[in-house]
Length: 99
Image 1: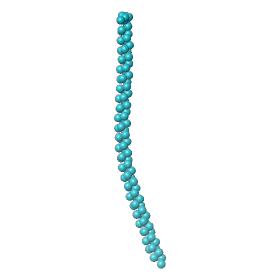
Image 2: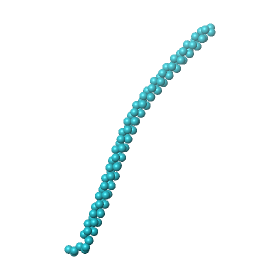
Image 3: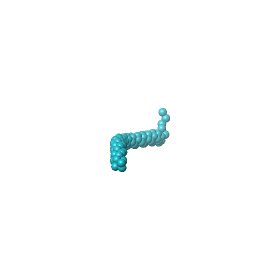
Image 4: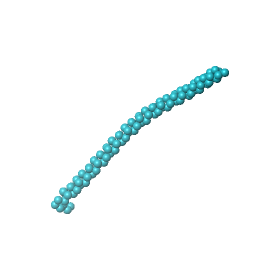
C-alpha cells in the first residue's frame, strides 16, 4: 500500500463529511416539505368538511324555502278561488237587485 500523502486522508474525510452533511440537509428539506404537504392536506380536509356541512345546511334551508313556497302557492290558489267565488256572488246579488 502506498503511504497517503500529507493531508490526503483529511481531505477525503472532509469531502465525505460535506457529502454527508449535504445529504442530511436534503433529507431535512424533504421532511419539511412533506410535513408542509401533510399540513396543507389536513387544512384542505377541514375546509372540505366545513363546505360539506354548509352544503347540508343550505340544502335544508332550500328544502324549507321550497316547502314554504309550495304552501304559499297553495294558499294563493285558494285565495284566488275564494275571490272568484265572492265576485260571482256579488255579481249575482247586483244582478238580482237590478231586476
